[in-house]
Length: 85
Image (cartoon, rainbow, N blue to C red):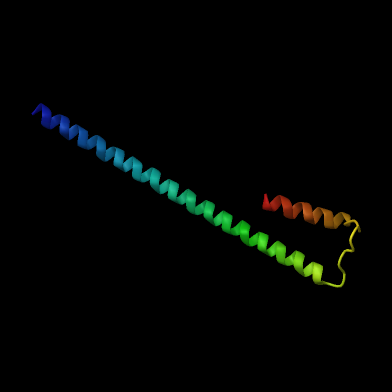
């Protein structure tokens, strides 16, 4: 009977460990999904910014080489960079 009780106790501990493992696994899968979504969104935003930059460079009102950006343009650029970070 002692061996049976010990075996039963061991099974209970294993079941408890399995439940805890499943909870942790679920949490890690959710975290991975969240990070993948964030990475996808960041990548899409980068593509949008690249397209915006490309379009701006194609317009006739392109900033000439060596010309300084206006205060507003500098702030918009800073804001876009900070959002990407």
